[in-house]
Image (cartoon, rainbow, N blue to C red; front, side, top):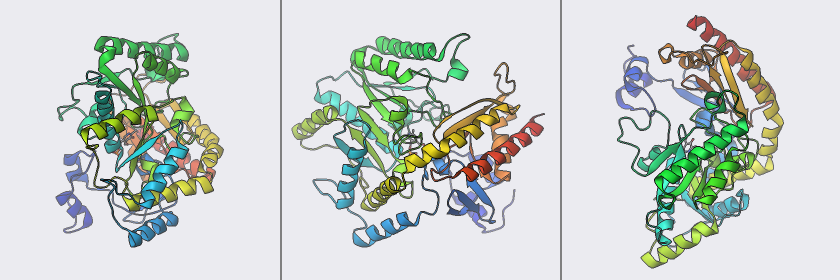
Length: 455
Ligand code: PLP
């Protein structure tokens, strides 16, 4: 395609290397330029409205024009636009936010460490776990186990945790010491006649087998999203985390909950850990912490994890880890205001009130000839497109069924996410029932279009 000289599209193609984008395809098709947002809608540069069924990247929980967050940012920018938190320095937004997160934690937590992104938070988790085990004299206990299709970020270490197909090839990853256990997707991997509970037992046995093969004295931690997001919205089978955590306890392996997507109401409880029964030793969160208006993430740890770390920092003279933007005061002020809004508007109560409609409409799409499975919790859902509903056979990837549905959705004014042939929905948490109807009406039309194109 040729772009108008000096147009935003031409300049984008000329200068901007986009994340998670096929760069060559981008040179041909150019960008989709989003200009403004209002509530659950965003508008492109031609003025076309889209219902943002992904809240951006599973993150803009309060929608796209929450003025209180703008005000909170402005007030903090005017007072103290930047200060750091190294070497005993502190500021009120950071202190207040740390206190608030500890109050909100799903299990008693002791301390919070701040970063800017989910990837940095999970990198911090890895480094703190290594530091913790060194402090305890367990120098061999360093390996991390995550799951196939788990998503934990893209920095060198967090990408090693990630188990989705595109994050290792070409990057010389994963690093040594990062292992990936079975994916608990019952629809895809459950065996003929196997109950959900039996499948969960098998998943826990797989994990135990891996720990034994590696040697329990070498395995430090297991990390999981309560509900897998970018791997395709995989809701764990009944009894899964109960059984997984029994294995971890047996071999003294830490449980890390990656709440980067699930935290802050997404699954119908404040934390995804509460929805699926995780009792984390360490928890990472980001995204909806600030409704993503500014970048901020956090790692919380129990006192059992904190104490050896604190002692080691004293023995070594300093905790040699920290970011220029750790607890950035403007980001912290926006996060605090976000948490205040969640409380004042009872955002978890709202999610619980509208989730039945969301799930009812999602599951109704299961009747569509293209849809093999629908799955979800709270305001987090997905449908899986299949070539044959009876055998669950997928389309040939070359058919690009998911991409077709994604494209058709955009034509109908709906932004979803296609993960292979899975279509995900995680709208802003402020969505109402009529907007939920609008979202799924549009998706139904998009599936009809995709069906016609695939015939
Ligand atoms: N963890 C989970 C569960 C995520 O979904 C993501 C991003 O989508 C990350 C970590 C990485 O976060 P970021 O993109 O902010 O680095």
